[in-house]
Length: 108
Length: 108
Image (cartoon, rainbow over all chains, first blue to last red; front, side, top):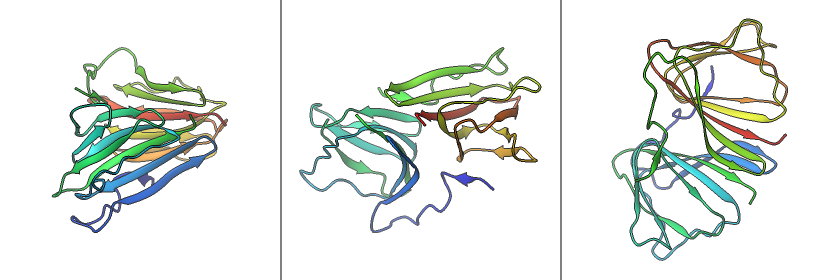
């Protein structure tokens, strides 16, 4: 029996996003994030010291960068690199299904 | 238009596996691998200095570790960590569809 990225998905909707570390080694961390309609609070921006590479595998999301006019729509298979300190926020995730993200964080 | 992990999949069958770097930064590399029935040559074992975390997203494969009796069957969502120098080989990949792997390599 292998570990599976789509195992133990929460019911929809759920109160909060779920974050699960899949791997944690010096300089790299791989995390599963499951969103069920959550988004970033108004005027909140992530500003991370680490680099991030993020992939949507199920569901859908809108990811906004502070230096871009419009949010990017992300669906299954879409991936984005987020440079350290590039400000960004999640404007929307699908309210009626689980959105499964795979995020790789790495030392900048 | 975002980069998509499932874009530009090769026709099945194709002569060789396709390897595409999606991200390359100091200490971490993210690679897409597309197999269309290929497997490791007889008696060949991978023996890597880097750590690897590998996920199958489409298709199916059998991954064998030298220190395990039986191969592990991997289908969509299944992931495995491969420690540095843990000898392993791909015994089989689905012959009739593209098997899409996401591999994260990191400095040990």
